[in-house]
Amino acid sequence: MVAKTIFGLEDILAEELLKLGAKNIEKHNRAVSFTGDKGFMYKANLNLRTALRVLKPIKQFTVKNEQQLYNEIQKINWAQYLEVDDTLAIDCVLSSDLFNHSQFLSQKAKDAIVDQFREVFGARPSVDLDRPTLRINLHIKNDRCTVSLDTSGESLHKRGYRHSLLHCILDSFCLIKLFV
Image 1 (cartoon, rainbow, N blue to C red):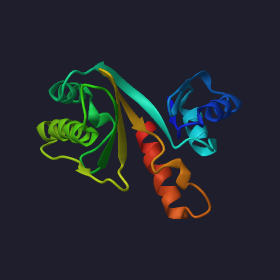
Image 2: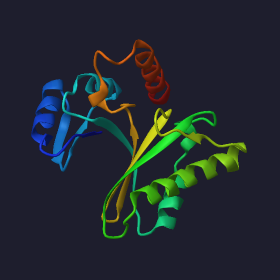
Image 3: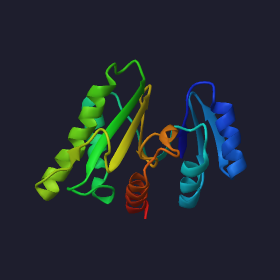
Image 4: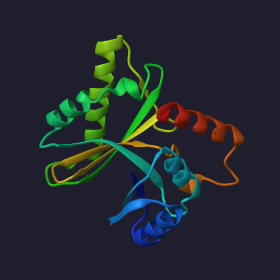
């Protein structure tokens, strides 16, 4: 898994993960990767103070152009993560000379997913940028693309006493549905 953070907090986040019991901790730029089971994923989302999101990578591949991204995203069986009535949002982070527009890549990935649903089910999930059922993260560094599921829902910095009980229940239900 990968816990995303802001620049400069990587060491603190790594220490938090270590204290929680994470294994194989590696610091990166604005992120810390680690291993743990599904229970640890929930524990990390609940307890990490310096993380913004906890991502669960599901696929990595080489990508040289937009069409290759589309093709590789289509190879993933999205029906195991999403239903036709669900909603999705895709975030993309770029660190590559091959691409220069993260929003275009997000849209290309969205097209691959909804086209797969249209072919199989004759209908497609909708996009909801505010409260999607499934938030997908693309991280492209040079020619390597990592596709991850966002296990956190809303950014973790928004947790706290102001978070309504209804949203807590809805977020928990969505996460349980996705990872059971």
